[in-house]
Amino acid sequence: MRVLTRNAGLHDIAQAGRALPLIFYLAWSDLQARYRRSALGPWWLTLGTAAGTAGLGLVWSELFKLDRAVFVPALTAGLIMWQLLSGCIVEATTTYWRQGTLIRNVRLPLTLYPLQMVVKHAINFLHVLPVFVAVVFIFDVPVNRNTLLVIPCLAVTLANLVWISMLFSMLGARFRDLEYLLAAAMPILMFLSPVFYRPSYLPISGWLIWLNPFSHFIELVRHPLLGTPPPGHVVLTSLAMLAIGTASTLALFNAKRNRIAYWV
Image 1 (cartoon, rainbow, N blue to C red):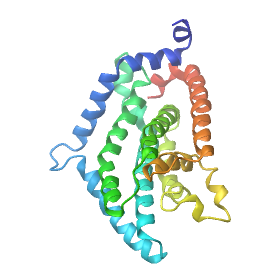
Image 2 (image 1 turned 180 degrees about the vertical axis):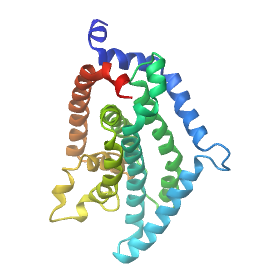
Image 3 (image 1 turned 135 degrees about the horizontal axis):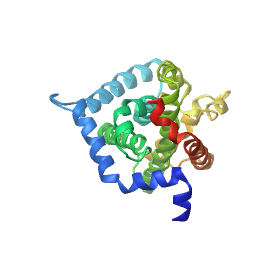
Image 4 (image 1 turned 180 degrees about the horizontal axis):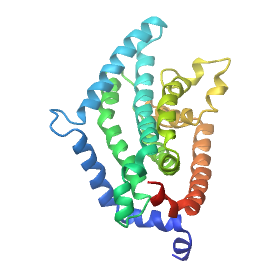
């Protein structure tokens, strides 16, 4: 308890942890507000992902003469992971200043807002997951005990997204141009990430892919979804990024926490 009271960042996270029901309520309310009066609500995400998977899977497998039973499941897993990663990172840049009124007038833990945003995109992930389940049945993707690894692997990825979201929320509150910079950079980053292909498809320069943090997050979850354990270096790198990223973000949060209300 003494550590929590001395470290403002950990104390803020502990307070946000005690408000988890409120975080889930706010995340769900945000989704309801976005899709209010639409016929299918968040299921439009599912339909969009299904259409993208069908179109890209058919065209790319024909163009590059790839085995559809191997390519389409890997493509679907890559697409749903990219939606989770890119959604959190792009929205994180606007999280604090969009909640500026609340931050200035209501005393709530500042880590609550990035957590709410990550929870919202985790709910979106669950909405598009049925597309992958359908692909599993259509292409007879193996389901075995390795598939259960998707739970801890997804938990590690979401934990990484929490510190990344906190970091970009602070940077986005201070530097408004970051939103537009990331929005412009994300399409390029998508093609530099193994969303449409696997790292093994690049035998000559495949090692360059592993310099991209997104590659580790995508492969960490994609391997269990396809019934295989994730490579050891992917697990170790993801855990190392979680430890170093969390410590660095907490240090920055402790230093700049009192300025966030002025920035927004």
